[in-house]
Image: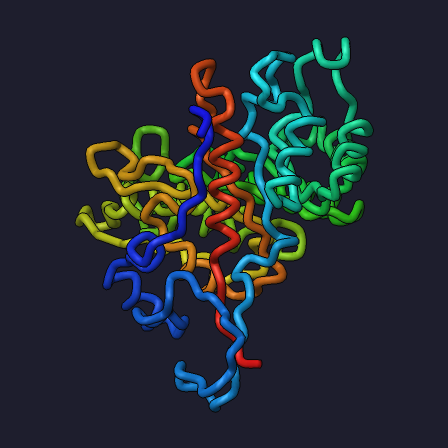
Length: 377
């Protein structure tokens, strides 16, 4: 085995089925189904028929992918080191043409962009969106979104690029507002409703992607400070307030599952109107399940719990961490509507391990493809 090779490994019951009693109780109280503890982490269909041992009507069960193959994608930020790499003799793919061909070979069907540039040494100039589209088409790949700048001044230009690449979604990796105050989120909602209408008129959906701060608490109640701003919270979270302020016909979301679980770890306490500290545990599954058709895209990003770190988690290849993707995707439903893009911010291995990001992409795809669900025939 070469130094940079990584063998795919099976997901374990611990990795897929670990969850807190609090989360399970919250799901049950909300009337949302949760997985039984006996459900296999990985289901394999031997197609032998016979009695249904899952308590069904006695017919055979079939096993289907929890994330359909056509909806398994990758955001190119995970392999940004190889997209931007200059031609070299490492034997590792570089640039759009070679990297996208390798991702298609692994099995990915969808691409989320994180910029449209590569090293100019490859072509002697910068590649064009039309040339990238041809590479996608040649490899049977579909562009399912992008992280770009979303603002009124350049939005039509970004829509032009998105349409050239054949996207159905256009988005950003930044929050609509970094503010803790509702007035700023109200202004952001007005802008996003307008831009969302523009996107819909051209056949696209506008979406925003979260980091953990998006699910921190607003300052929206209590005494005012010297600038007339509220100093305490009602317990409302920023992005959940934005859900209700934006039109569901025009504004959509991409949940970064890793950062949502970081938010669950970091943002548990707030000070209420009366100055009392309150605890509220954020549930990533419930925030999607209550509005599942507003989330066409997800970042399937994994992490190991590590409370020695400020975020409480450390990023890993998908399937190597502690986040329960089986429970997550099975509970939110709408399998055909949801698209899972693998991401790992820390995948690039630098000069010492130039193939690491692509090896992690391979490992993560293998583990994502092993998530399965039983259905009655």
